[in-house]
Amino acid sequence: MNLSFKDLRFIIEAIEHQINAYQERLQVIEDVDEDEAADLGNDIKFLELLIADMTTSLEQHNEREKIAYEQALSEALEETFAEWETSEAMTAEEACKRIRAISYQALE
Image 1 (cartoon, rainbow, N blue to C red):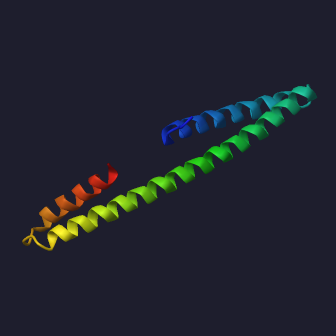
Image 2 (tube, rainbow, N blue to C red):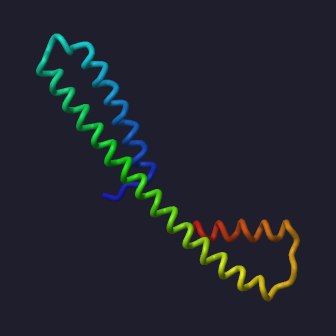
């Protein structure tokens, strides 16, 4: 399964909410039901490890996206600068428009 950045963030938030609910329940039953308390403690640890793994996946995904964007931007800039060498002077507004277009091109 290939999850998007948004998917992972949503799942992490849901897991964090579940951990909070388990911790609240644990405070209520800690001295009453040792078996359930132990189960909740184990579940909390499992969910915390799951969040750590998912956070690592998010960071790796972000790094890959950043590298891909930087590479595409670099290529687009090189191509554009090669074209600019043969073109006539432009206004600051035209330069901003071209730079914005290059950035959008890199995002595609």
